[in-house]
Amino acid sequence: MSDCLIKAFSGCACPPGECAEKPTTPAPVTFVSWRVQAIACLTFGFLAAIVSAAWMETQFKTWDLRNQEQVSWK
Image: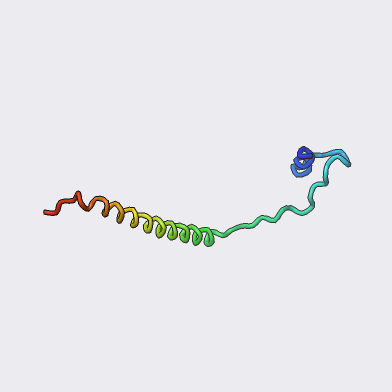
């Protein structure tokens, strides 16, 4: 059956009754404009920066608390 579908959609000539007919209307293609892509990229980058900054803050806080006895102040 998979050979039949591949033949039908690749444009190969099939004997009648062996394969499905080639679709008359092509599948719809959606195009995302470069502005939408840029806005999405900037948004995800901004969110990733906020999340990583929050994670680093907690990491540095715990590191500072663990090592506060070892630091000598002059």
